[in-house]
Image 1 (cartoon, rainbow, N blue to C red):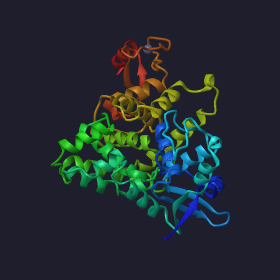
Image 2 (spheres, rainbow, N blue to C red):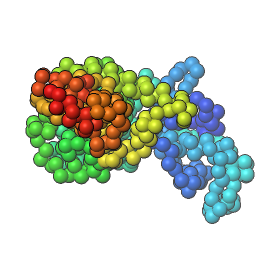
Image 3 (cartoon, rainbow, N blue to C red):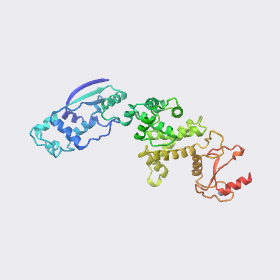
Image 4 (cartoon, helix red, strand yellow):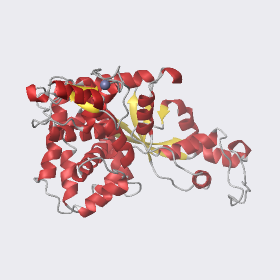
Length: 410
Ligand SMILES: [Zn+2]
């Protein structure tokens, strides 16, 4: 990394406006209030110091930059220069000059020249890797705007070490989202919370903070910790390459799905089936977005709705979990329970019910009765007593009357 520092008059910096990206993806969104913006301009007009700006050179010809630190300051300067806002109505005089409510163009020439010639300290980083830039950004932000996960990474107790270590699992490097501001650590904390809870739960920052506080003695070699690693290992076997479809919220859902299925079903060797189903599901879901409202699948719309806000709330995660489980069992209907068992599970029943469109498949006493959810039975096509498996594939909707008639035949 090469670092050079130069004082740059505001006027020439403004000439670079279109070559400076003030919103690279690791930056915070602009959150300055009008009052903060006015204070910065007032500071400049009085000739006081403002903090350095850090730019990363991203192209030599044409010369282009992205802002590593100082995004709000730079945007404010650009905005004031182009007439985007004026000074406060109660602004104090500057060197005896009244400046209340003035836009840039209203400023008397002396002040305008002072603004134009004010030298910004710009530190230019060249030949910098993405990681170096992120590292530098975090250090520059340190202490002023630490985001929740960064704060948790500084909390006492054993959960911190476990999560930090977990976030380095190879599976995370295959996800579609980068580790910007410890997003991998955040997701690692979320899935750990789900595992500790034994299923979907709130995984908002406040809940995760509480987990760090109550699990001060968390055993990284204990049963829950080993289970978390086992699920991630399974996911890493399923997703062996970088997979853009693995977004933050879908990783949390996939975790919950695999965690659940590893307990109850024979998942050995089904990694490819999991991956293929997930990629296909995401493809179908993405295709929905180009369809007119009346042509789109209401369930997928509801799913999208639940992935766009309150994503970290328990009811959203639970809904997505139930939905994805059912979709998974519909798509991979030959998954068998781990232990030989006669009763279909809830998610298997849901998948069978939807696949058969609620219609009795036996038709021994009915003519294809459309069943209600609380009035049907999941029947083994090949009877369980004859070695038929308790799988979605071998299951079918039966109305109670037909089902008992079938029982009578056997
Ligand atoms: Zn029937």
